[in-house]
Length: 264
Image (cartoon, rainbow, N blue to C red; front, side, top):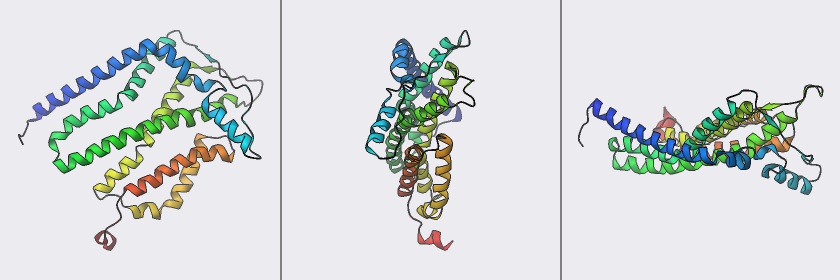
């Protein structure tokens, strides 16, 4: 293997970053053109009672005795309070959605930069991690969009400290929360991958998850309650279960402690 100088590595990294920038910008340009339709059909879909999650909860409520339906004609009317906000939101949303859509390509280009320094067996492990990480990222984005953000939106949009104070949701506030929750859940769903990597280098073992399972359950319940401050058990469970499944999946991906580790 030819040893490269620092400046040669820097040139390779610059080439990789240029490729990433070209792909992201190209995707952002395409998304910019179709952004009005994307806003109407995707981004603003949770603002109406026809959203898939609301209809699903109402259908479950009809089958489960004692469970109250969401009901009502839910609708959030967004307002724009700054002159340039709509243009800025148009540009920034195109960019961030481009990052989400091109996430596999971004990881692949970074992989081409790192791969020459790895052995063959390490490359096989990284390929598996790549596929798993991409899958989990998109799963987290889907959960954030379909589940977490709509629940938060519905609660906060209907919450009033006084009926004399109507809610008027600005476009900037809506998009900040939308992008934050979608990206947050995408990152959270990378937890199993992180645990798998830490397990492979011997930092984390399965016994850790068994030892702190009760603590983790309490922490996840608190986190779910913070995300969904609606107070009903069903909504809390809907958010808690994916987080707990992530915890158990992480435990399964981590190797058991070796006898040598137990004796230390």
